[in-house]
Image (cartoon, rainbow, N blue to C red):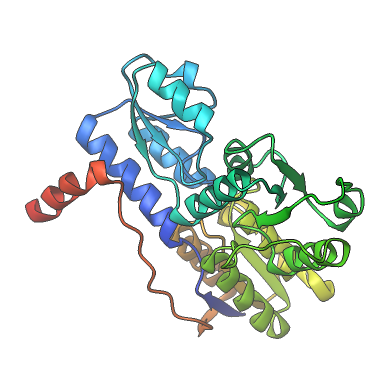
Length: 316
């Protein structure tokens, strides 16, 4: 068996920052530390932090008054922030800066009187947070058929934004349809889909031709991982999205398969390596790493954690 290992893969800068933030918060304040929704959409990461004393909540009411709360990488609405203040919570913000960028764009367009068309997946944590910035001004669409159903009064100023973890191709089709129907629609000055999402999708597109099977490491509720699996499955390729080798079976593979392995932006490298080890043990697999693009992006920690992080680094 030959493993084609895609690079870049796995953790992006936003996920790294969020995970480091939760790790430092646990060390600084001690458990329990409450996290609004999952810190990132990966079951392995969530389970690991639960074991360390993190408590993942879906409502602010679940956090005791005065407790320590971390906002996840996906961002939250102003309503959630106000609820945290009302309960006198010590809140730290690990929102990915690229998500914050979309929030700020929504605020800017809403203040300027625009109706905002947000391209995204209904119910996703990131979408809920973005729509919460200006709920009266935002309309959500998921595909071209949603665009075809849109109706606005003459003279309505329109702008579009996108969820950061969408398929580049899918978002492109929706944007083209929006521009066909509404030629005067405004777009953000820079693409909203995050660099890591684009890079991982590009790697799959370029490398899938040489593979018989594509294995995407990531959880089922991870939007960017699902998009990788969908992209991998194009042209009739066999593609699977799994949390790790425990989700694989020997009879899914054969000795002469060429297996492309990649990982969503919230999947840890340890899971990738465990999957490679499993394939090596069962199929005597060799690994060929294919670097499609280099990444060196880093995001700063929340201000409230930077001094403590420096102390921890100095103590090592």
